Image (tube, rainbow, N blue to C red; front, side, top):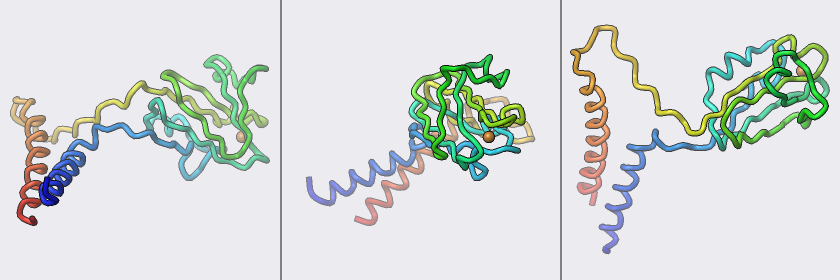
Length: 172
Ligand SMILES: [Cu+2]
């Protein structure tokens, strides 16, 4: 292969990668509570609903160790804010919890009444990332041929790739 051909192939691969990037799964780190961290007076239920957790992701609990910790329990203990003898406890102030299996996981802070006051987090770990949600339909009803929208999106991606290739050919 000449170097020009190699370059064209490289650009084509790059264009295809970008076109299909949304479908690729990337392991994510979720800082619990985002900027607020692991603290009182934060709605961790809403935070959990706003995030997606997939096998391979990591939860990061950030907090001052003087005031808090992280305890992992089962569902009933979570509801009751009860810490059983065998509960796993993290207390480093920057605890990294690997999400290595699908299903629910429950955490709370064992300090004083912090759990009762809402410092508790339930998440559900998914096997794989669900497909990206389709864009919401416009308020004005489109014609009843629903496949057209998806086809349009595919054509859009294909057009982007073709354009990228055309640009590459012109440049060379
Ligand atoms: Cu606490």
